[in-house]
Length: 77
Image (cartoon, rainbow, N blue to C red):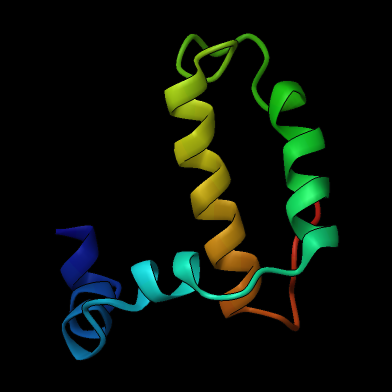
């Protein structure tokens, strides 16, 4: 429901490969390094993110894609 109400579904349908494009494109190495540094400190008590490489990698991808799509915002923990 939220995806539809928020307009996210329409945006996803308009550009279905955007997430993959953002991940496969060039990355700002400074942003990538800051995200890598912050990941172990992000939700340290949450079982989905503490020392779970796969979940941390998924979060890394989301944060990196967001930072590159929204350059005015960038990344900040």
